[in-house]
Image (cartoon, rainbow, N blue to C red; front, side, top):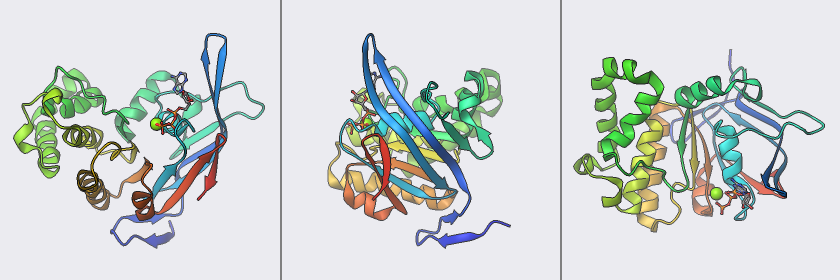
Length: 251
Ligand SMILES: Nc1ncnc2c1ncn2[C@@H]1O[C@H](COP(=O)(O)OP(=O)(O)OP(=O)(O)O)[C@@H](O)[C@H]1O
Ligand SMILES: [Mg+2]
């Protein structure tokens, strides 16, 4: 039986087994002949239900690492020791593109650093579109009411029930960020990857967004990996790591 290692004050439970285990991850971007080395052997374990914060200087590779964990990109292959990224009992580095697409749709919620909302869709549609990606057009049609209800519920919880029909361009930065978080949560992911979810926001808006994430984490027992520059936010998390010279250091 799994051994509980820590009862969170917030109520979420951290268990000892890693839900995510990253080993020897390297990443170099190739821009024509120019190579941009970013990650040089990242090792990281994240336990089920844990909240890990990633700190690091601008350009240190925080977003790059989050994109790799979220299956949006792949680690380098040609290194002496092959990379490993285990999620539950799956080895993500060996999975096909199709299977990584499923992993993203079923298991991961991603809050992008710059929101990435679809400008032509309404707030509500920006959130329900996640359900469409997960279930396909046909599956979505049969579950439409359930998904729309869930999306409306999340948006209501994030204080946006009066903005359902608005387009992203008509929203403030904090409102857009809350839509992005609702979209990340629509499929009830096991793992939420949040890239500076409170960046560029004033203190109060940032705190209310963080509270919304913490509240959801407590209710859903979700595992959270968050990038932030804000050390006060980092102090609230279970563990803080730092990216330095392309590697992880425990802070
Ligand atoms: N698609 C890309 N092509 C080429 N280089 C890239 C690409 N994405 C990121 N880089 C480079 O990789 C390095 C790390 O970028 P990354 O976005 O991961 O940093 P970061 O730690 O998230 O920074 P910030 O705190 O500013 O968001 C940077 O030097 C950046 O220029
Ligand atoms: Mg970044």
